[in-house]
Amino acid sequence: MNIVLISCVKTKAQHRCKAKNLYVSTWFRYAWQYTQSLKPNRIFILSAKHGLLDPDDVIDPYQETLNKKSVAEIRVWAEQVLEKLGQKTKLQNDHFTILAAVKYRKHIVPKLLHHEVPMEKKRFGQQLQWLKKQCAK
Picture (cartoon, rainbow, N blue to C red):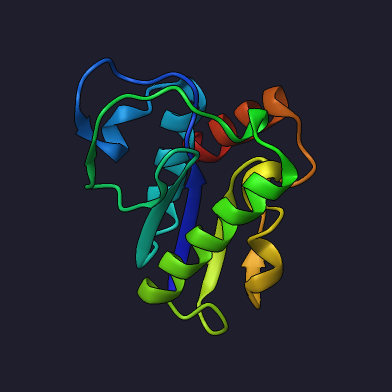
């Protein structure tokens, strides 16, 4: 199976809604559109607060980021994400495409046998340009 992991973003809707609709930044909208073009079997959102989210999970807006967490806290977060992900996918067999910043993927990627990080070496502005270009195809 092809699985996409996409990270949460700071800019959110101000009301309770499905996770896929909560994140409203330009980056997330382009990343979501790109994700759809990949025709994955499953999509999950990496949330600093909730861990692993199904796009249809209904959640409230929140202000939490991994950027303010210690390495130990991020490791615990990643372990929880991997535990949930392991219940929903086959970590050693499925192919994962990861659209997430280093802090969101650093402790997850080593546990995935088949993965790619298409924007791995790109800074934020470069990611946005790359995503726009992919979506224009």
